[in-house]
Length: 119
Image (tube, rainbow, N blue to C red; front, side, top):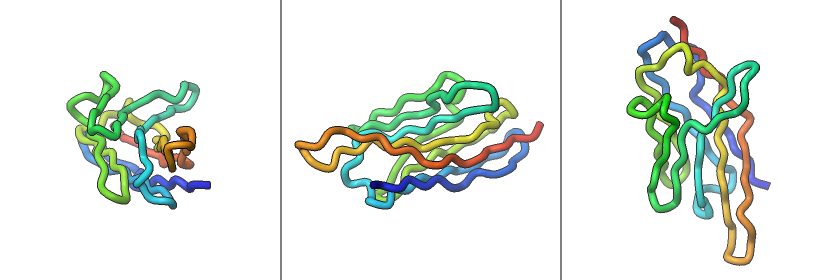
């Protein structure tokens, strides 16, 4: 089973930047869609950004113009600029992979990385 690992979270002041990274133990060759979600205490897990295999991106309205999702051959990134206190949450990477034509699409989640933005 693929293992998804996020990194790059931490504590940052409002207005600052962080870049989150997400890797898959099996690489990204079978990747269909990559997405970042976040969950603050007492709230549901919400979509932040999505990157499709054709390069199409989608963002939550609250992060448009500030966050950017991208990837290279091995890693999916979430560049977060102009951070606000309301961006504080655990950020999760979700990878939808399809290893072969016959195989279904499977989603794999990372364990999450904490992002804390101080006012």
